[in-house]
Length: 368
Ligand SMILES: [Zn+2]
Image (cartoon, rainbow, N blue to C red):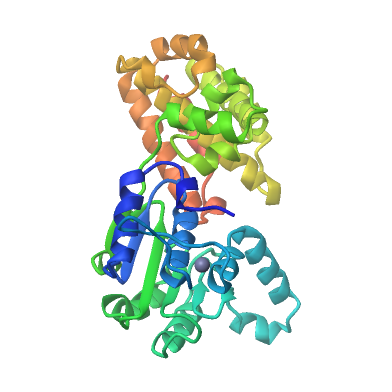
């Protein structure tokens, strides 16, 4: 069983929230933001347990949870969210076509706690989900003293966003709503303004290395340093980091980058993009390669800016130095801007409308 003490990093933020719970002053609507893997969902479940726990343990003036009462244990069952969502989606697939459309993915392991994950395949929170919240939030909690609603990724469909505004503004006294977001700037201002913002910052590379040394002793020290840089301060990301997968994606990204920068014929460039055709696993592969490419471009920018200490791909520093000497700031900025568009387009699921070739072509042609 885990406790608040097991939550890595952001100590002062966590202390602040625990104190607010102990004094009954936790804001009713919270927007919890932070990079992927920073522990937004884990912390949300911990806060939920602290609110509902039957034993209400205290550490000085800080709220805690016991971890073994009838509330804590059921809330903790929601920890492995991806498996629960997979199971809910699979169950929906079994339904008749007409029922499927009406069925939204909801996770509930405790009667007073409702988790509303983004609904596949669009991965947005839908109107039906918000309606379920509105339907239950005005009736008193059944078994505990609170009702808690968690949105693991607060990307709402338009109608869903509009219909949650009122309840976000004035939830009943016993209710708490926690919205989680990686990029709070992408949320509607009307939603943001109704929530108390809480931000989880990135951990330092040293904090991540220490965490890996304790929790994943099988990772070699040299790899630890690299993973710490690559996971960009996200504890969860570092612990689950697939280094082999990353290195494969990065090797392709390097071919693309090298041929765009150094090879005037660009033969390898298009040979590489050729292997990235659409298709189910093509999307994941493309995403991984583009993320690696974006990281490499940022490293080149850091090298050109004279802050080599901050680069992530520390193991290929020499290759990066060579590339950095061959490009201008302007080229890098253009390439990064192009990457941003490609990546944010992918977040909005627009993969089919974008062309990797077009992006590669523009990288290559701006060198000519
Ligand atoms: Zn408890």
